[in-house]
Length: 193
Figure 1: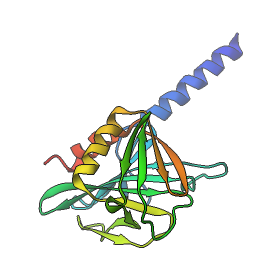
Figure 2: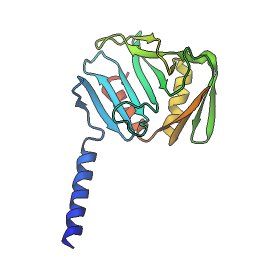
Figure 3: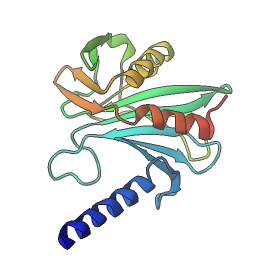
């Protein structure tokens, strides 16, 4: 009986510790503000003028840090005083330069994205103090900048449980658990215009 009680106590204590950091902003050793939301990580530059992003990593067996199985980034930036977003998808086998369409499947609803809305390479912040973005050529990555399309994608992400990204040479699945919470946290912290 005592063993069961100790096991239960340890389980409850570790659960309380694990959930204590959930949805709380903290300064990471990399110098960024971070907050965990389910399967999503919200990341903002510590400087008030810096950009933010929401990240979901797919870790394959043996991974402990970077998602070699895939990374989905939903980014925020300012342009002419207005908040805008971008999407980056890094996935195994994405050819470079990428010039094909993709299909986003939200649970079981397919949304085809035509090739003219897909940019080969990634998006990055020009500096920690900047709200501008730039593009860079990188393998296994494609991006979406179309404002209306991103708005529709975000709305679907908030309603679905899973997002499957199908591209010319493969498919990767991302959990959407915590996306809405992470999105609201970043909006409240920095983009409440």
